[in-house]
Amino acid sequence: MNDTLRYYDSNAQAFIEATFSVPMSPLYEHFLPRIPKGGHILDAGCGSGRDALYFHQQGYRVTAFDGSRAMAELASKKTGLPITHRTFTDVSEIKLYDGIWACASLLHLQAPEIADALSRLWNALKPGGLLYLSFKHGTGEHVKDGRHFLYANEELAGRWIDDLQEVRECTIWRTEDQRPDRSETWLNILVARDFEPYQRLTTGGNAQHFLPKICQAIKISDQIDFAVAFVKKTGLSLLMPDLIDALSRR
Image (cartoon, rainbow, N blue to C red; front, side):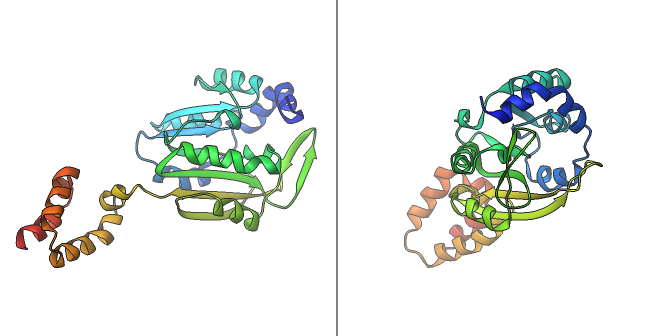
């Protein structure tokens, strides 16, 4: 066990009391509207369980864990949710979550550990899913009260995101600490994973960009039998009436 986890094991109750009521609505507003209703959210390094409980109360399915055993146990009692004790190296799920929330948790890792942790979280995210991360804004690694902190700025965050595959979009912004006794600045990172190819054709606004191109290709293609078989096989006939219309006119 490292010194950071020892700190949280020894100070779990005090930490929960200090952070459970911190207002987080401005950050939730960036994240939750893009998660499907009833979607599955992983709260990775959940601390007091504050965010996990809020997500649960909004009707989302929530899985939560913390690296501190004492924190996980007390947060579970506080929230009534089954919060487990594990670390980022234990994350092995594949394409399971619609959203992953890692609020002020990855910052306790050593710099060389970040790539593996991000890769594990990214692999656990469904195509089309959303990953949220936050770090204290700055540079370098620091120790405070026995806890290790990895600070991050926009340049470093950009390098981390560049190492991920299938990134659809990334937004990075700063916020001020909401605790009255703090004056720190936080770096927030929101990364959307790209959709699977079939999702690009059938999901929301993406369809309006791809559909005209598909219809035009069908009009000039001699491979109509292939197109018809594709439509029947994938069920696109139910989702894309314009596509069927293009086929019928050919």
